[in-house]
Length: 353
Ligand code: SF4
Figure 1 (cartoon, rainbow, N blue to C red):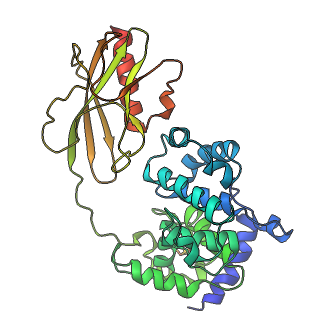
Figure 2 (figure 1 turned 90 degrees about the vertical axis):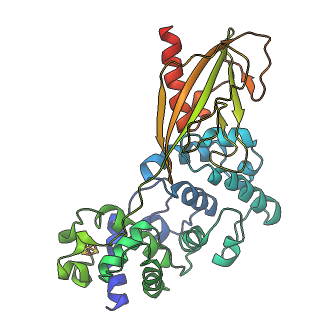
C-alpha cells in the first residue's frame, strides 16, 4: 500500500470532518495561523487515557477554567486538584498531572518541551502521550497509536495477529505511515476516523475516505479485526467500608495512601480488599450495624464487592484513623466513584432510619 495515497485521502477528509473538541485547534483555525496550546493538549491527552471523550469534556472545561495555564495548575493545592479529578478514575494520573505541571513550571519556565524525547522525561508522560503532544501541539512527525489508531491500522493492513501480540507490528505500520507533511493533522485524522467511521463493531466502510486502500474491507473481514486474545476473567475482591456520622452531620473520611489504588483520594476507612473474607477493622469505637448494603464496582483488574457498615458516633469519640469532615466543607463529588456509590447508599439508609 502507498502511504501517501492514505495521506492524500485522509487529510482532505479531516479538513471537512474534524471533530469539534474543546482542546482541539481545528484545521480551519490552523490555516489561519492559530497554534494549539501545549498545556491544553497535554491536559486533554492525560484525561483521555482509558477514558472516553464524552466523560472528559466537562472535566477539561472545569480544569481549564480553574487553572488556565500550567503555572496556575502547578500552584494549586493537591487536595483541590484531587477533588476536581474525582470520578474520572485512574487516580495516579492526577498525582502525576500535578508533578508534571510543577516540573514544567519550575524547570522549563512554564513552557512544555517540544520533542518526544524531552516530553517523555516528564512525570506521567509515556510513549503514547509524548508522541501525541509532539504531533498535535508541535506538528512533529511522531507516530501516535491509541486504540482507535490500532484498529484502523489493523484493518487497513489486514493484520491477523491478535492483540496484544500485534502491537509491535501495528506500531511499525503506524511509524511507517506517519507523514512529515501536517503530521499533527494526520494523527488526529486517524484518531477521528477510528472514533467516527472505523468503529469497533460496525465500521461504516461505505463512507470511509480510505476504503479503496483498505485490505480488511477488500477481504470482507473488517468487523473481525483487530483480533483479540481472550481475556482471563477478573477475580472478585471483598472489603468492608465504614461510614461513621456524628450528630453534627460530620463524616469520617481518610486520605488514601499515595501509593496504590485510589492513591491520594478521599475515601471511607475500611479493610483491605482481597479475595478472602475481610477481617472487620472499624476505624472508631461505635455501635456498628450491618444494613446489608453492598457496593459493586469494577476496576481494571478486578471486581469489588464492598460491604457497608454504618454508625452514629459521639461528638467526643476520637477515630483510630481518618478525620471528620464537616457537613459544610464536605463535597461528595470529591469522592472517587466507588466511594461515592458507598456514600449514596449510606445516605439512603440513614434517611430511612
Ligand atoms: Fe475501517 Fe472500513 Fe475504512 Fe477500512 S474501509 S479503514 S475497515 S471504515
